[in-house]
Image (cartoon, rainbow, N blue to C red):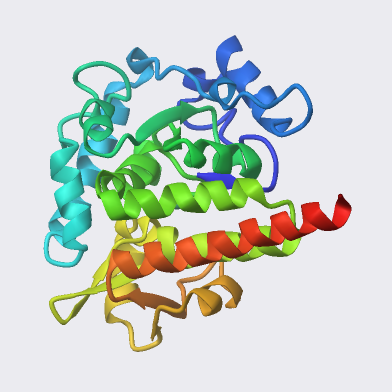
Length: 294
Ligand SMILES: [Fe+2]
């Protein structure tokens, strides 16, 4: 999960003991400076998932959310998402392991080379993009408290793994997301950075896709939210527009309300191909800029 607004807001809340140690503090500090001279090693933004830090209550919260949401999604999520969840062996029984032979990464890396890697909280945008460029998804490891299952002020491991990671098992979506990360890392033009943030919102977070004549969910903000997913599919207040990259880069969006406008893909190939063209445009602009400066 990316963030432009600063350091983790998780610290001091949730099961923060998991992200309060020296390793997490060092990773957070490094991520804040990522991209500056001497802060170019993306490996240093990641932390170990100290699995013993999850409480019984955390595990119960995972199972409750998993059961409730997966039942809803069986007929409403993109088949690509559902296949991905099965192939990485996402389980109702436990919070996913990120390390070792029992981990989701054990399956994911064999399928597409993607990995889900722990970070201490919202990753600053530059670090998040650099991770995507090497097929690493910066993953929040803390779990929301059981008493706030429905209210999520910040992403947690349910949003990041349940919501995002199954799609990374798909080769086409995986290619799209890496190209996105490479393009976002390659540009320092604030206009492109803003456009790419908006594109992320309307695709990775809140995207819809047409499958077999029906509109299905794939964006993680929908997949991991019971209320928003129902609203996205059923409400007559939602305008479901055919996907167009230029429009999805420039449409204003609402952070604190249900989305009134959503974009519907015809296929993930459409998204990958559109992203490839946009990435080429960014790289060509960079090349022109370099030749002008030279
Ligand atoms: Fe997200």
